[in-house]
Length: 158
Image (spheres, rainbow, N blue to C red):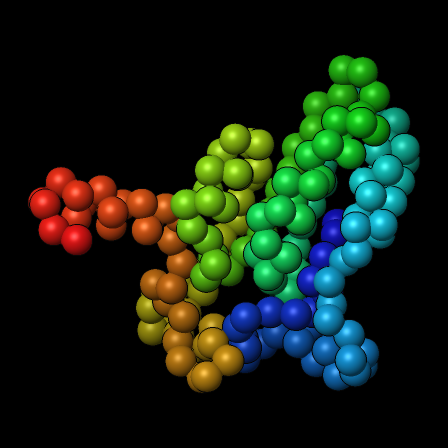
């Protein structure tokens, strides 16, 4: 399991023990370097002696790395996979930064996505607040921008 942002997150969940880890590394930007990224993928694939490798991405919040970071994961995975190896990428996110670009990338590369939610709005917003202290229920969505564009272009408004 890789946590490419370390404990960095765009939420401030009441129960998250991981957020406190940021204080242990003052001055860190909590971003996995390309060199470490490549080494992680290589070592993960070298260590597996089975026909399936699962690359698990978690955080903090992994979407803070941006889609390009994960695009750069695909080539080394292909490079280091033994012939016949099935590769699976899993990705746990709070979903706040998901947009059409992310969703196309996930779809094109067959990522399995876990969306972190804490039940109905009242419970979710009680525990999962943004950095300003506001509830975050409903702040996620894949392709929301494209859906909105489709609706406005069909109605003739902008």
